[in-house]
Image 1: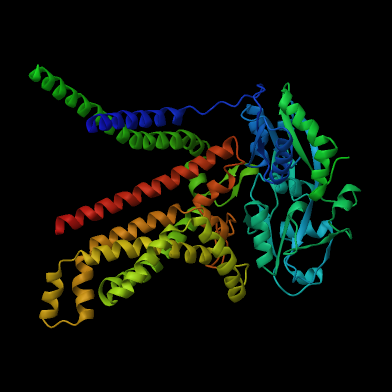
Image 2 (image 1 turned 90 degrees about the vertical axis):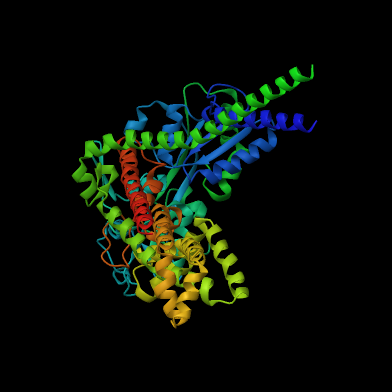
Length: 284
Length: 296
């Protein structure tokens, strides 16, 4: 009897080892055109929290649907939907010319403001678009040039390829496009933080720092500057008086399957947009 | 009847023996295969980029501007080397002294409290170290020296703490492994305890201590997450120890999610450089251990 058990265990263990080897190679293929009730959404880290909330609300109502939301960056999201490795790609910036050529379908699901933020202890509370550009290019270096204290400005930007940085650099002309190449004028010693959360932690702990984050991430640990006299609020982005805003886009390629269609309709409908308007700006 | 049953049994036994042997072989192959696949993949993706950019432009280029297709990683090589060297230097001094304290000086009950503490330090995930550094050390450096605090110094401090457990544990083990007779002999000859530690115990435990340093170096140079959080990540040569830096590992981790085309290949090429560093490090370790063995 004992022997039998040990034999059995040998067989079991070896089966386990072998199955481990084979499952390691075979990644379950995602089915862009199936209707198996599984959706994968891949893309912008800025869109991720909103997409997750929308997905949670949607799956609470449609129990047979499972939605997997990943935040890997706008560029990666756009690439993923083009490659067909996900069902919906998300982006927090407009598509670039070369990406437009991929013939993806764009669904704008929300608008988002980019707040220019400083430490709450900073005495400066207003800034012009031009001054922001000069600060990020390194032409304005000291807070006293803006009426603040005599301290060096610590510029906090995001990693190359971030959707928030892409939108910010484009809107404020911190980059220049020429012959298909983009030249960045961001000052070389700018601090690079990974993700909105890291920018927040850096600004909250540095009295002389300036950075920018998605409006949805704004809270009391930071002070948002008025830009050209306009406060960074949901209302001001909606009526277009706040100058730094961008769309949140969901992307699909080719014909959409029933699940994707139903999810996108839900987002664009009243219920979805109500969730959007809690922290971002609805498209209605 | 009895005999044939026995025969079948022994035949079965031999078969099981063979099956299990093969299983072990397969398991061993998994490790080696992954290594080969990883090496092949990194080099296949990275080498063409290095050739396209040009070895000199890539290794000694001072500017990293992916959007303009300018890829120079010299500042990051310098940052990785300086950060690692600083951290290893500091943690060797602190770590070896701690090991001496635990192995030789501390009473048993004190060592029994300290040792699990050190082991626990090794188990803390690196992102926690990074966050701790960002919230505690970075503001302190900013307050004392200005410049924002995200700096080479912050990297060195965090890496020092992260490397310490490796150096302490292995050095202590090496010190404890020194035969008791050495110590007794030294003390019997009239040497003081301190003389015994520095003239007898440390030289005898040298190979273990050196191994701990090389292993620590490996951990420091490969650390990514904690470094991203405190380094500032500007791809420039630091002007001083308070300057912001980007290391090779953080360069890959920061941009891999976004990159495509030549930019992505350039990140793999960064991986190639890192890989070469680590191979060289391992060679040095093996050479050192080999030489030690020859002398002993």
